[in-house]
Length: 301
Image (tube, rainbow, N blue to C red; front, side, top):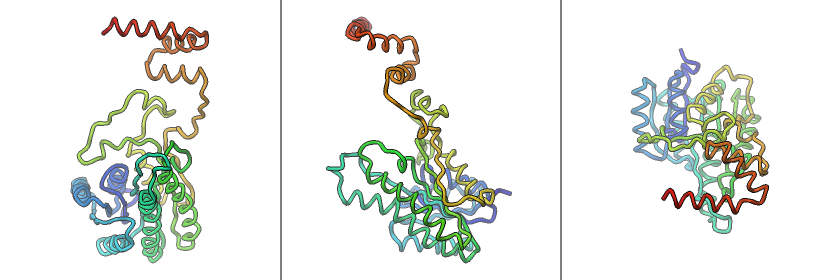
């Protein structure tokens, strides 16, 4: 028997990517799975694959930002399987990366609606059912972008930061009902193989080796953590955020010649070349190095 045998789990955005991997893992752990997604075609295909795996599952089509759709999903889960024990708020979107001066209010509102309002609505309605069953678990899929940012990501970063705050607020409010609430913040997770149809990842050695763990993350990594947090083994854990990013958020970076030489080593795989470039910069001989490289490229061409 799996750790989640007899449990009922809703996974929002469960048709593709991280959500799909979570749905499959929870199903493999014995849970009955409700896949909720805005993409009806992808949702039906994911349902087929889950049943092929042997999971007990249904698909509900809808938008997490619509309270009516959320209520319908929770009702469908209750009608099909008797209730809800686990909610994974995974559905999320980003906005086109562009300067804040060019971002529109419509883009901001939609990202906040899906990434923050949606989890709030699902928690509100699923927790009501969980409370009647004596408890449950809510897992909010946030992001390391709640903790650090790249340029021009204000809507997404704000929505994920809000999701972390929502997590600890819900954990306290729902504690009397024996409902635990936790967050998971993935870093770089390559989802190509969990798309429909699956694609081969296009990753470089540099992509992998810049991570202290030595590789880019996989949806299965996140799914394994979620399965543990949803289980009774994690019964003493609530209100906290788990970062799963291969060590990237704790990797301290200062730009100096040694860091740049290290980056060149990662990029080229040639420590000697990287050291020569570093020495050329330090000695003021970079012009000669550039001229030699141009000559070599012309000769090679």
